[in-house]
Image (cartoon, rainbow, N blue to C red; front, top):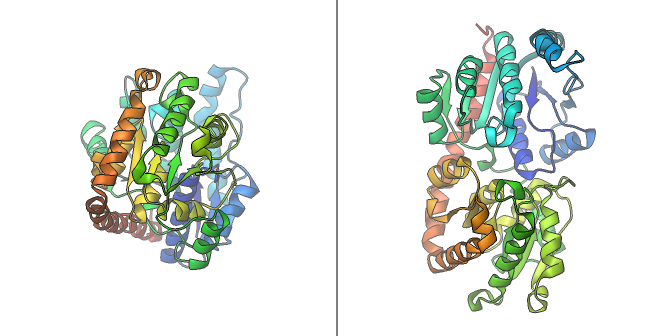
Length: 415
């Protein structure tokens, strides 16, 4: 059985990679040895990282992904788009592909995709008329204006597994879709090599880390999601680090700066880390350990999960921290944080609504973060006791999603 796997172009986004690894690994177990995946990874190196992380070799790069739409003008491209997509589907069918899985989390949202969302919705509509299309572990929307009726029509034949209750209600009530199932983010499952003690010991030893003797900061490089003022954004992360350095209760703990998206562009988390390292107070520098290395997602999870707690602007860094039973303070810029971490994990009290120029320009964001740090320190044991059973419930819902996808792929007839 050959399956098309979409929305994993960059495996240096550890969150996206975690979702891909778990989907490939656990679905292969359900479907058996003869399962192969054709992935839209942008390079053979990206594909190799998934192979290395899962020990599954039946993966190949989709050579049709990103093919240019024929036409010289925008109008001619639009006219040709549907025909172009149908021809593409036929090529996939000739390759023996029986279905397409589009990975979450929130690519089908306006705050990431912008105007491009229309083209993706049309693509999903065309594909779902000819083969099974699964949207796995998704936060979809919310949409506005003309995109609401478009999404309602284009997604009607897709099989959607949401990663939170909020998305499920939105799809059922607002978009009035029928094939909607509540599930959870694919990253909640144990990563394929997560229980390998040698990997854990090795990555901690590499940076001279001991469990619970450090805290982790993941400063998102995607500053534009929080504020237009990039200079102030970098400065406030620096203020947070310096503020942590003054807390007596954390005096013996190292401060780890970890990137969770390290794709070497303007949104690379390491850009903010470099600023912090270069500008931090001398008194704090001996405790700060910046990590600039690329690593496997499981190694990033080991670092996060063995810390005392995490402060993060990347949602999947909070997922990994929580998945290993530790608290994570999340700086939120979208509804996905409320759905995945607030509702799904029951950790509304660890989320900071962090979007807005005033928060970063005035420095209010630093006060909010430091207040949450004090809250975590004062309620640490009760937070940990709440996290563990919630994670187990999320794992069960996530695994049910994979089992259901497997069962539907095994069905001989699509219609």
